[in-house]
Length: 116
Length: 111
Image 1 (cartoon, chains in turn yellow, green):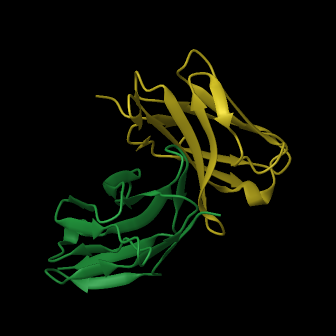
Image 2: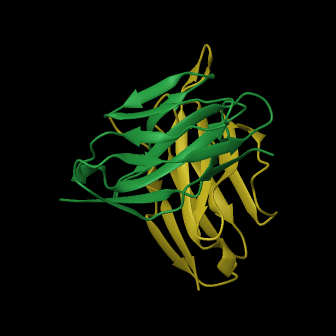
């Protein structure tokens, strides 16, 4: 079946512009996660959604970052007024919610963001 | 806080060699421990996991044992193949959803 998909795969933008990154989770997965993979910081957790709610957004680096999820499915990560330090690969993952907790996180291929 | 430290790479091996990647962790509470792998051009995927002390996770010939006394979760494989060339990440989770990753270790296996 289809895995987690992300778009675009690559995004080059100029400093100060806004960008939107999209994640399509595996069908039926109620939990969705965003991570960031950068040279300086490694792989970092950004935010977790359960359905359309975000119980934990503690990893968002600043108020320039926001994320939403609609219909319990697609999620969009928005970065406003991008800075060069935002350059990274943004990874999305999804998982089932099981009786005993959350299941394995399945990762998408990522969006590589370059801020010039 | 919660953190993972894994041995730095890159690691280069010949086929059929023994592979060990060290991983130690710091955590408040009792974490679940994971190894993720990222093959060239592919996304991160779960390789194996262990949820409590002394558990051994295993998959594709890889093994790791959850050692609470040494706060470690070292990854081992007895005989590597070229197809094992990848980046390996050790990770932990306390609360079931937030993964904390190590820096990753790049492994290259030569024929």
